[in-house]
Image 1 (cartoon, rainbow, N blue to C red):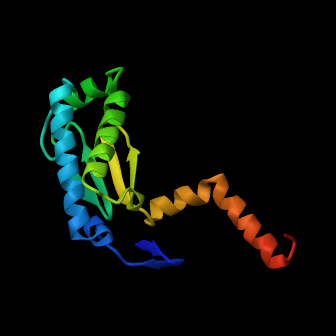
Image 2: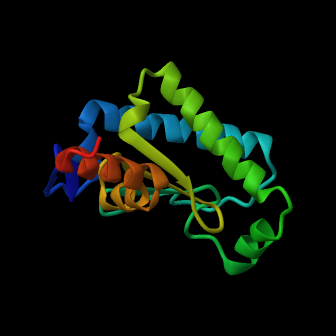
Length: 150
């Protein structure tokens, strides 16, 4: 599902949401970032670094087909959050260099070695917006305006 102009519309994949050129640039940026992280940090590496759940891209820094001992080693690292933040910073820098529209993409740190990337306007982004104070402030202002109280 995708949110555009106050409507929910069907959109099954990140590629559909972003369009093929932007989607390809995003994938290339992730691959470049994964390569740099692998060079700069001694982290366990498996395979299958990118997977999808609906319109969310799941970037697993250590790979999804890695054994539980390796996952535990990564989880016990004191700097695991720094590595994930470095990955996001590196991806954002790569996005800017490749002229990716950062406004269309949300990036969040997930559990373990996961970074979740999803388009602006998907249900997760909407829930996040609804849970923010600014959403309620805007809604209250709009209601007051409609009632002539502003």
